[in-house]
Image (cartoon, rainbow, N blue to C red; front, side, top):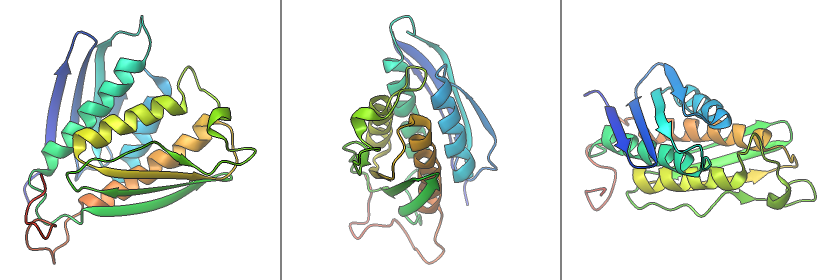
Length: 207
C-alpha cells in the first residue's frame, strides 16, 4: 500500500501553519499551535487515532485573539487528511466511537463522504451540562471548539456528528473524550478493508 502522508503549509496575513501527517503512523506527535488546550486535544486525537502528526503554528495574530489560529489549524488539518487519503480506494469510510470521562460520554460518528457537514457539538442539556454554562479554559471555549471542528470537517469533506451526554461543566472534561473519540472514529474510517475493491461509494467516486 502506498504511504498515506501529506505535508501542508498555509500562509495568510493572519497565520502561518504547517502540518505533516501520516495516517498509518505510530503516534509520533509534535504539536505547537500556541493554544495550550488545543495542543493537548490534538495530542490525544493523534494518539488514539494512531496517526503521526506534526502541527506547528509558526506565527499567528495572537495580539488580536486566538480565533484565526484556531480556525486555520482546523483548515490545514482537514486539507492534510484529504490529501493523504487521495482517491480513498478501499477505505472503510465510516467510523464511530464513544469515550467516557468521569460522568461525560462523547460519541463521535464520521463519514468521509466528500460532503462536509457539521452543525456544532450536540449537548444533552441538563442542569449541569448546559452549553451556556460549560466553562472556558485559558480563553478556549466550546464555541472555539465548534469553529475548529467546522473548519476541519469542511476541508476534509467529512460528515461529522458529535454528541455529549453527562453532567460536567468543565470544558476540558467535555472536550477530552470528544478528541479521543474523533481519533478512534477516524482511525476506523481511514483503515483499508481488504474486501473493498475500489472506492467506497456506489457512485464510484468521492469528491
